[in-house]
Amino acid sequence: MPKTSVALDEQQQAELEMQPCSCLRDPFAAVPPELMPRPAARPRLLRDATCPGCGLVYQTNRQTDLCMDCERKGVWPLEPPVTGEP
Image (cartoon, rainbow, N blue to C red):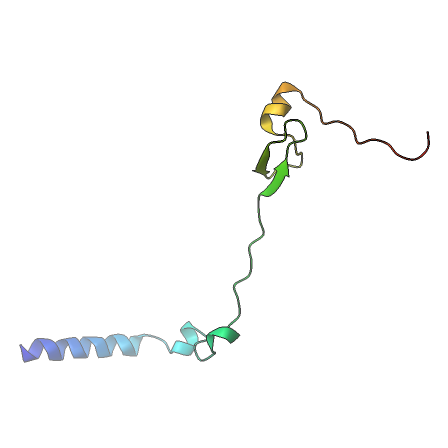
């Protein structure tokens, strides 16, 4: 049995020698957690929208706020009231 424990120790030692320095794996290893840089926030692909035809609140990546059902039915949103000159 002592040979296997020695063999494991030698194997572990060989693995440690093959691994690069911790500064190469994680350049912020010595920095406290509160000072580490935060990962960049990914831009949201979907936005919240409210359908002006039926009032459905949903998420979409399209330019229009009309939901698919209202667009399929041909519902058009009401034009905003014009203020100013009569």
